[in-house]
Length: 295
Image 1 (tube, helix red, strand yellow):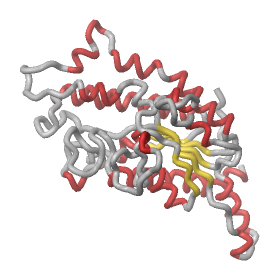
Image 2 (cartoon, rainbow, N blue to C red; image 1 turned 90 degrees about the vertical axis):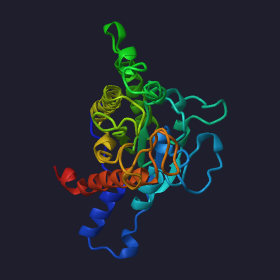
Image 3 (cartoon, rainbow, N blue to C red; image 1 turned 135 degrees about the vertical axis):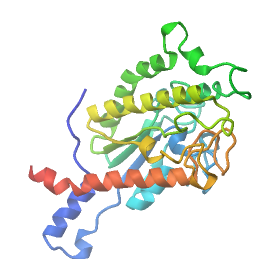
Image 4 (tube, helix red, strand yellow; image 1 turned 180 degrees about the vertical axis):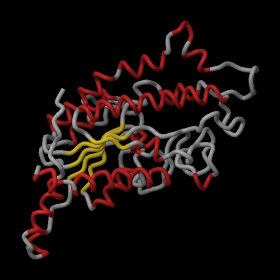
């Protein structure tokens, strides 16, 4: 596993050198970043308002976080994200006709964002299995089901994708060797104890399912850092903006959305917050370029 830090963004370094040389504005003009967004519905933004995308199968929205980040950075975006994507869809054809997402990468790529893993472990399906129309004891606990026999099924699924995620990061480096990579985790979907019956999931099941979301994000963080990539913690950004929050404060929608977005997915407010966080992480990288180079 390559643990070397990849070069900071070329445009940031170029601007720093140009500024130090006091060149004219025309001379210091930098090419826009070539930015490729990869990932699943956590990035594609199904049903989030925006311009129509010609690929209807992927339910990509121009209001998703890659578009928000690209606008903030002045980047040239190739959005390859696709709702329902799994790790295998980076190298294989999704739905039988959507090209592999890795096809969007090249040696000209400057920046890659990556959001993946939820579909590989069946995260949404697991969350749906936690829903109960009635309070305890009238129903069935998903936490009990997933941990029956002393084995945590979701933890096992999360651990099982580690090697494949490593291979994904290696694949990005092979195809886009000059790119910085930013991995995003998953959000804080529900607060401790939940908010039954507003969201029909028992408190202990809410705590269990969110702990598995956090566990997945932690795996993504550890593997990303090990590969020299950046990690943006969407869980921290969305605390207090979960499905239990007031409609105007939500970044993530519940079973019955209160704004235009897919159930159990980020809404437009969430995508805006996540996109700006990604852009800030990229900007911070570029601003460190002179000091890093000097070292």
